[in-house]
Length: 354
Image 1 (cartoon, rainbow, N blue to C red):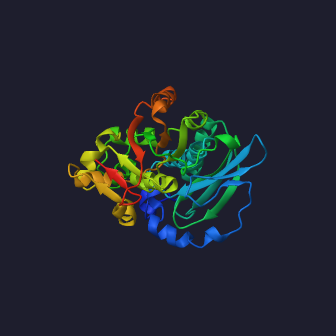
Image 2 (image 1 turned 135 degrees about the vertical axis):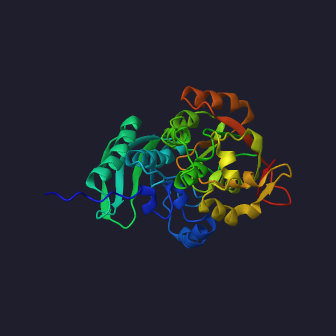
Image 3 (image 1 turned 60 degrees about the horizontal axis):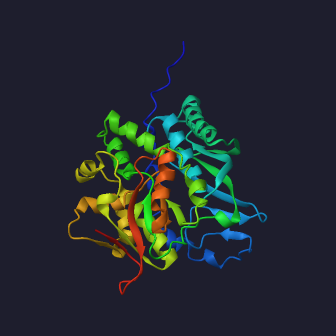
């Protein structure tokens, strides 16, 4: 007689946070990393940790530079296959955000073996493998551990021409900002955890978080594109401020033009926000000036942590239409111009949202 295995708990119940909402808050991370900038930096290292960019870039020769990045987190959804897909898409995004083409990945796997079945863990890995297959790259190895919380992600490697590397720090005053994906993943994940997300909302969340940011290399080839980053755990406001600091400038954003996932404004107004949203705002809210017409919910949406979020492009005004055309060609129908890079005033580097 065989004994039935006890029902497994929801994946999200096993983690204290999910997706890019697991990130250490910006202020705490800055404190942790403050001593690392003193390390010796070889001239071949084109991008390191100095501007909190999406990936490291190391020049190999006159024609090639290696992009190296890693991302991993705890479950943002309960379906193991979807969790794997989201985590893999999110990790590979950083290669695209540097303007590169992914070439291979390594899997990072930490699972509570005594709690989850091998079938469930296998489904997580299968989701990651299918995303890598869609990106045209192999998972060439990795590392596994038995951990208290489920953790999955990738080391993602890519190639880019050294002259086409797009840092988050090279925006210019007068540039326009174009956002590739709608915002609101953190709100939907909070609603999911509280059983307030319907099937249609879940489908939108999965579609958004598993869409590879494939426009990256085409955008990097455009002379009018000056800077690229992707919107992840620090929210739209946090990553826009990183871009502003790199340019020693300020950002103006039109909230009415920021694309939102359907229903997230209403869900956020009903309290469906993550703890990471509040931690984000505590870290950089003093650098954000909100227009008087905005509602409290706009603050939550600006600081909402995005998992596998969209590319944020800083380009000259003449290139906006072409940038939007690149996004449309890759299937990003919601891409929109959302703001601009402006000169810092007496208030210093900050984000003004109207």
